[in-house]
Length: 92
Image (cartoon, rainbow, N blue to C red; front, side, top):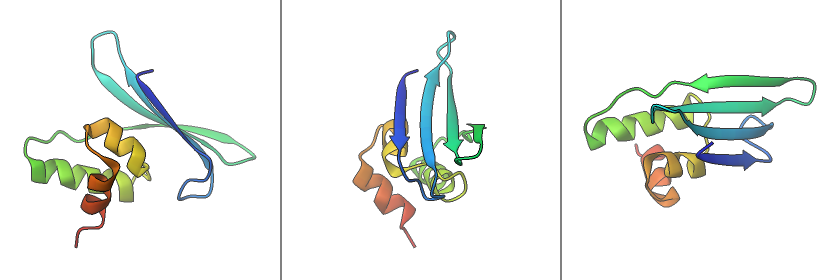
């Protein structure tokens, strides 16, 4: 595990662990574990490839709004600050 973020109350209202895993071949995986109280679900999140800053920002926006990842985790994942993530996800 390279980085783990525990969110006591995520956007979905559940306890969530967002985990960045580095594999032996230096590739990375993103795993989200959600505790719904009556069951625990595990999900691997896919990251779409990007080459430009605009494509990166689009991916950050997607990961936040569609996959429900936290701003703090996305900041660590992309090597930027949490306020920068906030600006990206709130862009109009």
